[in-house]
Image (tube, helix red, strand yellow):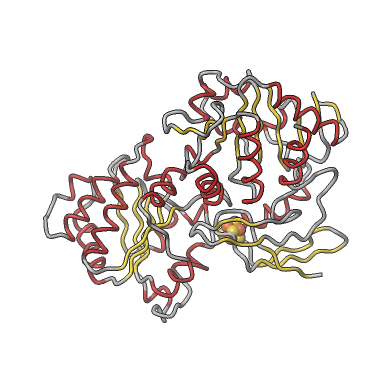
Length: 420
Ligand code: SF4
């Protein structure tokens, strides 16, 4: 049997995937890239979490849910962490749960693209849809990101190679620029390659804006090669619609000035008569959805503290910072592996807490957790909606039954909330 699917391997949420299923197993995955195929096939992996575990012992799902509720109820300061790999409906439930237990709601968005998604929303900037980019953008800039390694089908399906309404020759109708701190694989398809030292993104954005407004600066101020820079500026001036896809490279050393400088540049481009937009290249499949759900429920994007009853937010108080101070005694981790990805001090704080892991795989965090609640693989075994990097909401199309005792994130959260 052949079924259509939406890939949850990255925030492009490719909706043209075809999966051949036989006897409840995946036989073939068509159209997906290597990352997407791996995600779809992960439902069959040996590292799957299939049974609820308490202290390493197999328990019933009811028992595990009861224990999770008890841990959260009795926690002095609970953290509910993750959400970027869960559907919008589960994020909403997570926010309700955090409110109910006076907890702290956060996830990888506070150290990834959460700030830029929030910054753009605060300024009232909505990104164009990828269909529009494909049809109309004649200059695509990849800034501080390397989609050839991270979002494999970005150029081939959405932004560079296919023909669009106003780009009838596909790649021949477009200019491609890559800005990065070193040569990358994405640069192989670029017409302009701007290599800058780390931390000079804001300076480069200012330099480009200056060129467009008639005040000349020196390319050396941004550490960029003069010849390459002016050839890019000439190309930019000939363009009619510029879209900048930017990655975490814009946050060198935790600085946010790169993102802010980029949005200033977009404004300058627009006022010079060029249509322009910027879209963050978030990695996790639903980081945009997690931030948008948090904003619509509380007015805050991430790092939301419900300990005082009402939600509060401080950019300086993120889960990583508070974990480093050993603030949390119980941590519910959903669809994330902080033990493998957080800085050493935060990991030490996490190791001192009791961890409840909700995940489809036995990650490093799940292996160290006090309690494991096995989750279904989103988009493969469970549905719901997810939000693409451009803000488009897509309905996932699950095609397998959840393996073992696993359940959709939403179902698990509802069960825990009911016990509370
Ligand atoms: S580009 Fe992303 S969404 Fe598309 S198939 Fe690859 S991993 Fe999946």
